[in-house]
Amino acid sequence: MASDWLASPDDSELEELDHFLRAHAGDEDMLLDGVHGFLTALAIGPAPAKPEEWLPEILHAPFSDAEEGERVLTLLARLNDAIAPELETGSYEPILGELDVEDGAPPVFTARGWCEGFSRGIDLRAPSWEGRLGHDAQLMELLSPIIALAIDDGVFESDGDFAPLGEEDYDECLAQIPDAVGAVAEYWRTHPLEDGDFARHDAGARTPPRRRGGRWVH
Image (cartoon, rainbow, N blue to C red):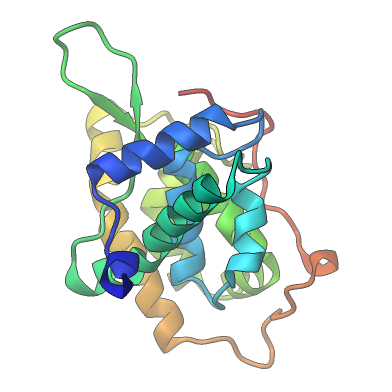
């Protein structure tokens, strides 16, 4: 049982979790790609989050029965617990959404849902992230592929003028997500929070990132 709990969900289990999230999603709720981005930001960030903090950000409706609840919670825990080992072994890949394409056309992937979830993970630790981003350009540089995708997909607003990413540039940024995530995780390991950082995590101290309203529908 312990090994099953620790194992990363396989494709069929991810589809099962995706089906559950879609069936219970409200207008502002995250789907599977968003949940993965959200958990990723928490896993690599300045301070860990306990399940009682992040589960309410994902689940907003009661389970139909105890068996369903146990199954969904197990899959979410395994999805979360797999992130750190995947980063250590170089096997991390973001869960991305797919856009509708014509029959026979190759799949087209989008990071919009993943980036939305990632931004919510940062939001959960906003004072610490923003306190460090405010005086360390290195962290902003490490996040640059993710920020570029988020701006291009309308997740983040920016005061500057950013030309839309071309198809090749977008795909290149997608390919850079694993390295960016690993680099940010290493950054926080080697540059942990200090007394001068905004380390308070209470709700009153949170400052949400500048995200656009509304929810993208797959």
